[in-house]
Image (cartoon, rainbow, N blue to C red; front, side):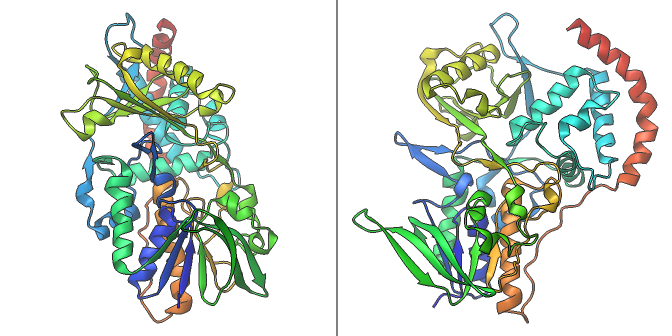
Length: 476
């Protein structure tokens, strides 16, 4: 007999299942697709295992890194050494790193302090609006900040929360350290080993099992309607009665589609209906040779119309192999009107502006993933009041997912893992009330009062640097 059924085999569901099983509970994990991992996983395309995108592990991913340690796979991650910005090649012959001037660096430092000095509450607004009224920012600096955010998240600056941006900056400031990346594709080096540990621990895993509907009676979730793939490939629909607890670790859109019997039970009630997700595209180019002149680490293309960032993962994973350009397409929605073939052509031409050695003949294999049907959660202004907590008004229903309640700025893998831990703790309080609580590491922030003192000291420096930065901007 199962104590807990976890529905959704992404990182949140896997974390909840792992944590509950470690507390001695009998756990079943159901996933609609054939593989676990969700957007942290990968899929086979034309015989190649393709990540959903570039995955990084900053030092402030405290719960995620602890999970990695628990799984015994810390050695599967490597520390990165640098972050490079590239300008378009002026003469089409060489890669051009972009180094900010002293004035630009001073204004960027002042901007970080200014952001940390803010105390956002009910007046949370978009990052675009916040940057727009900063007296010290040049147009180029504002565009750079917005581009950097778009390339690393799933939202344009007009739709993303300034409070969330502050939270992520504070997390980096309070938890400094090298960013880590997997030594290969995330499925092989993280999700695959995670699944094997779940199976070894006794978690029952059922893939190809999709949640269709739920039944609610009184203050309990009493039934699950599931669609399964049989051994002969036929899809069958079954109804199960629920005797234990259920953790729903599905995307917020899927949660909302279950209807008011579920959304009204969330805390806050129906808040999930106001959340948004947006696609964050990925373009993988497998090349026939190692492209010369590229840095080994993460590259951002300054001024890229589609907000491209990339890593030559072939160079990073294996010193001897050809280049594999793993690109994030921040503004993939701009390609919606194009066929995949035309979209790839546009993106490759954009890459060639920055990587002049790249030629069409170099490209052996292409994989474009638009992710329009599997978008990323994008925290918008005021979302902190809408994100649901793990516990619900239904006595045996709990929620997990990267969209769940978290400190401002916490999203992505860390948010997913944190929510899985919170859901496990919500279950633990009911089934094991005398047991130790599930530990959730706190991500520290920066006190606005302290930042305001530093800002006051730096204001004359910023005022002196701004004219120099503006003259340089006009000269460019």
